[in-house]
Image (cartoon, rainbow, N blue to C red; front, side, top):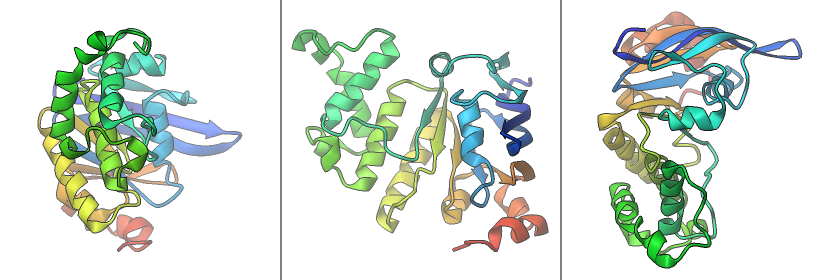
Length: 251
């Protein structure tokens, strides 16, 4: 694997009882870029993400991360290597505060058990870094709010903060703009651009305006296969893409 490639899949395939959800997907993600995976519903995007983060076992093919074959690794082991995913549905603790959520994520990075029963002084040692992360995603005014009380877009920002707490080299974002209004989309787009400054981002996203403004490279999936790959101009001018995707649900 070339040094500038952080993630590569070779012939990655997943079958479910005869149905092929991901079919021979081979792609490379360059280090330090924002790479988008797009396609119509049922194209295999989320299944592909589940294969990358080891929530599904591939039927065949390989996954290489920083040159190492991670195909057989467990999800926790993949995360420890620096490949971390945030989910389409917010995965924070709803009744804990913003500070407590980020602090728990920092404990995960430390690799020890959760210190729920430790003294406050031990937990407070992590507050400095937690506050830094909270400020980095614009949540400093919400630091003591319970996650369940946050507006939707702010809750997604909290999820990104908890992902950043694991100090990933590469972030996988599953539809980060899902369900957001225009103001929240602008805020989270700006946040993704900021956090990508020193790491790689691979994201599934339906909002084509977001894809066009953020992505260095785009891979289009349809029926589990790679239909096209390139920058936005190349992909958007591809007649097969326009037929399979751009003309279906294009806003």
